[in-house]
Image (cartoon, rainbow, N blue to C red; front, side):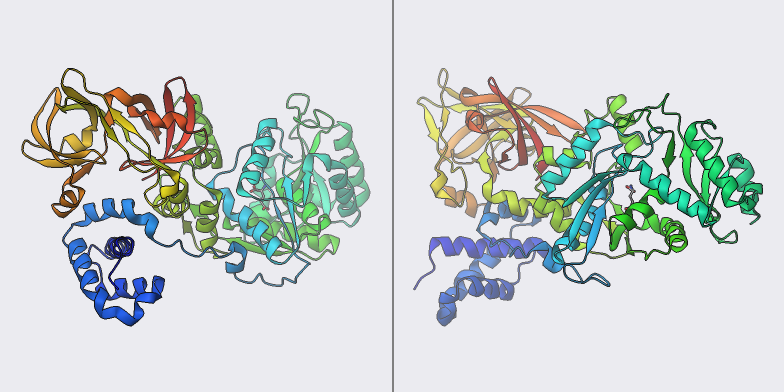
Amino acid sequence: MSVSPEDRDLIYALALDNAVKYGGKPSKGAVIGKFLHLRPEYKPRVKEILPVIEEVVAKVAAMGPERQAEELERYRHLLPERPARRAEEELPPLPGAERGRVVTRFAPNPDFVLHLGSVRPLLLSYMYARKYEGRFILRFEDTDPRTKRPRPEYYRMILEDLRWLGVEPDEMYYQSDRLELYYDVARELIRRGAAYVCTCSPGEFSALAREGRPCPHRGQSPGENMSMFDEMLAGGYGEGEAVLRIKTDLSHPNVSVRDWPALRIIDTGKHPHPRVGSRYRVWPLYNYSCAVDDHYMGVTHVIRGAEHLVNEEKQKYVYMHMGWKPPVAIHHGRVAIPDGVLSKSKILAGIRRGIYSGIDDPQLATLAALRRRGFRPEAIRRVVLRGGLKASLMTIDWSLLAAENRAIVDREANRYFGVKEPVPAWFPCERELVARPRRHPSDPSRGEREIRVVPEEGRAKVYLERGDVERLSPGTQVRLIALGNFRVAGVSGRGVELEYVDNDVERAKREGLLFLHWVPRSHSIRLDLLYPGRSYAGVGEGNLLSESVDRVVQLERVGFFRVDSVSGGSVTLVYAHD
Ligand code: GLU
């Protein structure tokens, strides 16, 4: 039994993969092991395949890292996909969780869209509810019509983000529908002597709190507090003139925990709420409505970022005063994304100043932007869940996300030629040439694409990539993929002059020629390529016009892109990753 060409290619792909992972030196042992695992039929004849493996490993070792990486891109599809385990199976057990009894929630403020940082609490909460066959709640925390002003489009976009991620809430609530409940609990807290209406200015109150001293209102009777609270509701106080405070511990080490404010007045005449207009003037602050809702919604496990640790301290007082059992709270580490701008105010300022084209600008780490670039929810899920519940900071590297996504889209993406920064090249040619590269290198059933090179006045004209042209000098031989091997006759400001040599692909590989992508002038369309922070007006092969919006394609040697628009004779692609 000799080694079939397909299996030889598989050995080549395994050696490349191993070399790229381990600093350029493929390990013969590792390649043999992996190959026999995938093709056990060779096991009785290891001796026969050894020389082939040795030859391939030596060839890959001699290549140099850049070419190894390039070749790996072309052969990666031959490698088996990692078995996709169901994400929730990989999660560690949740403390105190019982099958059928877990209730989790995700509680976004609809004052902005979701981004990579939001995905960790969201997916963990959702996955744990699924793992334990419990319930998952989506709760819009929209109780700040003034500073964290909710906007109708953000409620909608958050739902779209969830749908895209495959997250289906079992129940959905809007806090702006629940103000009467917050008032009822406030009255009960007042009756229990656990809350009081305070009319100190914020400055006066915090000066006293810093010293651990009570403000004059702390000693009011429940009756006095009740009538002041009714006065708040009736409009007897203006914005900032009165708050309802929860009694805590005036010697609590964290000053902000000392008698924190639960409800305050917002002039909804000036700042109407997008859902309930100016019907209410007394609005709960986050810690209060969150505690009340987690209790009434039966939440058993709260999973959120470490920035909420102090909030847990605060919320516990509501539970204590009311005699409720607090949920198990788990605070995972923050999510950091190098170069990823996640701050709402920075993003909105950037959009106003024209630095970003919108919420889905490719520079951003919003889910809308990732969606637009062709990242798949599954890739995001895999990366985010890898951090699990750990309390340490989690860094999501773009390269990590790209690797996960590549493993998914590589199989489905059709291949095309596209040139970012075109430089003209030409060679003597009398008759029409047709190149027929495959739509997908490892899936012949998808057929070939046809690229016609029609000469004009004895010359064929093609476009090459500026970055490639910079590496050429007279005498160099290059391969134009699927067309032939050429010698560079001259490079000038006008372009590159080529001469056809032969079409021997094996020789090109053996001699390590540079493999170039190219686009013939006779079969080119305008290609707009949107990269994070910059765009290119390039050219692409005309076959790109048959793609449809939302599909992911690969421009060979350039990268993976999502089709953003196909119109008239031009195509816009948004860059995902190499
Ligand atoms: N609305 C809060 C936030 O987005 C929810 C925090 C929590 O999960 O308690 O930060």
